[in-house]
Length: 58
Image (cartoon, rainbow, N blue to C red; front, top):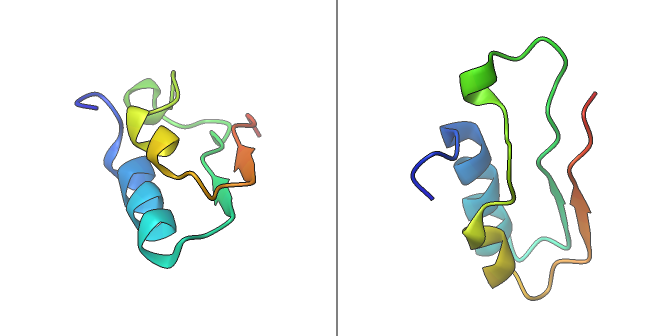
């Protein structure tokens, strides 16, 4: 996904490489709007083994 901030793409790549069961894509209070996640990246749906997806706003 072209508009997904790089830090989220890196987390997704790591989860894919290590086949992690949990993925934290939470937004942190005070983050610049360009760096916030506004939708679930399509790449997440490739992680069939994923059990927990954290999308909280902290």
